[in-house]
Amino acid sequence: MRESQESQKTRESQESQNPQGTQPKIGRIPALIAAVAIVGVAIGAAAGLLTLMLYGVEHLTLGYVENSQESGPFNVPVIRRLISVTAGAVIAAVIWWLLRTRSTKVPSVKKAVNGDIMPIWQTVVHVLLQIFIVGTGMSIGREVAPRELGAMFGQRFARWVHLDAKDTRMLVAITAAAGLAGVYNAPLAGTFFAVEILLADITLETVTLAFACSALASWVASLVKGTHAFYLIGKADGLFTPDYMAFALVAGMILGAAGALFRRGSQWAEKSKPSGAGILWMLPLAGLLTGVVAIWVPQVMGNGRATAQLSFSSKADLAVVPILLVSFLAKAIVTLLTIRSGASGGVLQPGIALGASGGAVLGVLWMQVFHTNSIGMYALLGACALLAASQQAPLMAICLVMELADAPINLFVPIGFAVAVSAFTASCLGEPPASPPANPASAFGNITLVTCHLLYSRSTRRGTPSCVVGLRATVRRSTSRNPGRRRPSHA
Image (tube, rainbow, N blue to C red):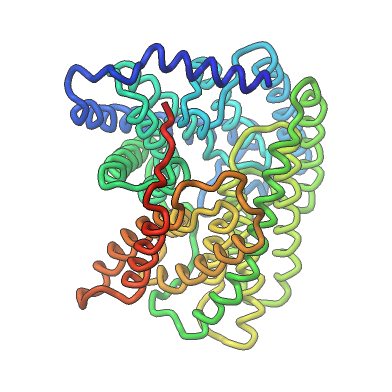
């Protein structure tokens, strides 16, 4: 009740400061273009600085800096790992307790998109804490931090230029997604994160502005932190073999189910977070347990890069299967425990790590019969499949992993097939939504149509593929069944 009253107050505050009838003095389109340009540069610089902060914390607490060659604290002494992650959890627990009980609560990005105001200094502290705990070794993703910062920047700029509620909602979603794009140099993933997850809607204007902001943020961030492939997948031949398509079907079903379970687990952990003083003992305990597990499984520490890279670079030998399975279970359990104990952060990188481990395990078994492809290609497919299922966002998932690994574009064909199977499997296993979005088939169909046209036009010019024709028919049928349904206004 208290949280709903606070949300109502923040929306009323936003409406009073940014009424629906107010129009930007320079015009709506110029204001949106200026917002995309200015906030895109700002969030790109911030994303780059957050990455440098992560490296600084890692160097200070663990004595190493993650990179593609040394993705985890494998060479760090055991006692230093234990002290780092435990001390980091204690510090974060105290600050988060003060922040959540003695100050204005920082809303989630989705709530910010729908109108909740993000307080300035509380959001900044909240963001820095997320990067800090990842740097000390806590098992959680760091991608929420730049998204929250981007949402705050977007809100403030929208109020400054007097955008109405509808355009403010769009801008906040776009700038939040640009934070994701900047920190991982993934403009396509940022674009689809905005239109597929935050807005669940697509127009030419939205896609254009989202892609422009994400691309600009990625470029500026690369100037600050440099640019490189986040994952090294080894030899990845774009000329995939027929058995790889069959593997996509099998792996898609298995990892789709695993992704659905991970989604349920993360939702349970998020809902069960301590709301009061419980974080003061639960988060330090989670840090201590993480350090203990890291004695035998050091790749469990951090946002998941070490676990994923271990999977991408494994050998196609049955002897590595137990190691990969232990990595999978340890990462899943410790990540959910970290969230349950009160930590804030993301699950995108942990999801990629779990998918890469699962894909590598299945790939090793597959390669005992079919001696084709490389282990990195199976891990790549698994990462895309599980992430798509756990996030219920197939387009964002496939683009994020492909961009992080700098994978050949031809692999969109088998990996897209695996993602489709995993998303369908997860939807069959998932619980029905309490309030389904207006005309979801039409929204997803429109997004998929755009993607099909983009990918198809890059590979061939022979005409419209059958998948696009079928999707058009699906969208027409869905629209005809719901001619009067419109998305509710988020004033």
